[in-house]
Amino acid sequence: MKKMIFVLSTATALSLLLSACSGNSTLPTNSSLPSSIQTTLPSESAVATTPNLLTPSPSPTESPSPSPEPQVEITYRMNSNYDIIPIKEDGNKKVVLLTFDDGPKALETLVPILDTLDKHKAKAIFFVNGYRIKEHPELLKLIHERGQIIGNHSYDHVDLSELTNKEVDYQITEVQSQVKELTGSSPVFFRPPHGIGSEHVLAVVKQEGMLRMNWSNGSLDWDLPKNATNKPQLIVENVQKMLHKGSNILMHELAWTAEGLDNLLDTLEGEGYSFVDPNTIETTSQP
Image (tube, rainbow, N blue to C red; front, side):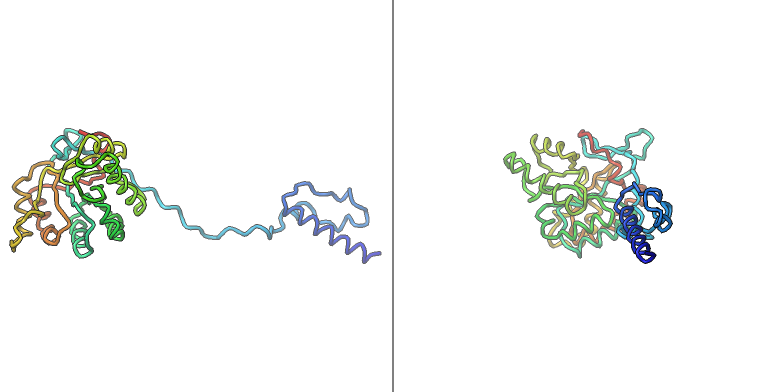
């Protein structure tokens, strides 16, 4: 008889334990069982402290959540001449904006530009074309990873004023999608190829939440004499000829631009200019 009581007690205790694991909060009490086996039941507190083997224990250490990116104060805006000016009257007016069009082209030209920008703690907008993104998605990611800003320069670099509305839509929105897929965010700056647009272009740009931006200072790095041996220096001279407060400087991802960029930025700093962070430029209203 004693042996039977022992077996029954063990089975009853196991039943109670499984009931607790399955979330059944109603436990039988000793008083509801035969007196011969009451003392063999575990107490409710014992069942409650029994480890739940069906639920995995949490990892002892978990990776901390990434800190949110700090908000950048909007302190500049673009005027109707495409110059960059401070929003407040007492803001620094002696600034320039650096921009590079028609990329991303090649690692050997892009990296020296990025390195020089880092050296001068300067930010720039890289206005990219969709077909080049398709050829070199890794270069677009590199621009983003190096902390520079990506702008939309249309998919095929064609005169948008000669396209149908549907074609314009594709030229602009496709680049938005490409950049977002590769970097996680869409551009907020748009520069039409050759600086030419249309009312429909402007409407699509606004719909996509971008600021349409041309330039106010051309380096002419794309139009230098083919046989010139001093192209890097010519770029510096061209920028200086048109230099003024708020200059929005147009350059391209070219070998001679990469070579002359350090000298150009040294020259600008030597004349008391600083470089606008594009993240501080208002993009919600078109002048």
